[in-house]
Length: 361
Image 1 (spheres, helix red, strand yellow):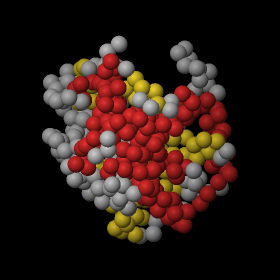
Image 2 (cartoon, helix red, strand yellow; image 1 turned 45 degrees about the vertical axis):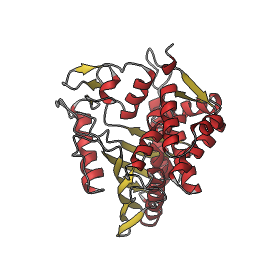
Image 3 (cartoon, rainbow, N blue to C red; image 1 turned 135 degrees about the horizontal axis):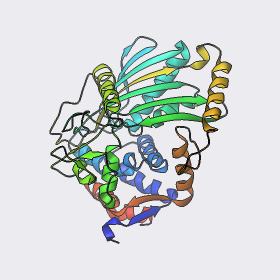
């Protein structure tokens, strides 16, 4: 095996202090260090390595360019009771997102619902985390997110990139069970997954990517190394239409900022998010909602699995299965990504040897 393509498997108990040591290099306060690290590692645990600790090199570059500010907190700029507009001061999205959803949850409990518009925040990470935060409090949520960075996704029928990966997410709590969490990029795969594939020396599945001339390719380099191609949207015009809606609602409406930078030399990742939060206990009979929800999920999952599938899974179950496995066995990090993380540590003034030692690599 090419040494560059080997993988480290790091126990959670070692990875967390190593990443905390690195994130302190941003000058973050203790609470921020914990929140950033915990959310990034949570993404790795759930199998979304594209949104995990491999983002830290990009964060360090954005910080060096002045496009990521540590120790920021959410600011409410418009308060109309059940309608909130908030900004994040280009702070860590792991902090801003948590604070914004805590405010939205409080208003939903007060008024029955809340529409929360969030802008000017750095990378919000795995959007499913915010749906989970709300579902833990018994709240339904819908999230439209745009990405202001280097465009990386082509519109349906287009030969170059015009969108970010523009995530869409829904969270539905289920009484006595884990919630349904539907969380996906409107591209066929997340941008970070191309980085992971490139670092691991793996090809992508056909139908995910075009090169810089608009021709189909399975080489992830077209989403990582200039000259760049573009990812494709899922479901052809359907994913493209949803990506457009995320740009208009998460970007133009919520954040007053849309993606129009074709060059994208800056390393920042800014997100806008429009969240609709509903307290189902205030909308009709809550026991009926739960009974009908549980009955349908059970009926859906009772479908006999077809060839190649072990069982029918509800949205959110694959992530929970992965988390259980990785908590027991450790978190895989390919050697290229780990090398980039160590370089980021050095850029932040944190000795790479210290990070390696804490991680046991």
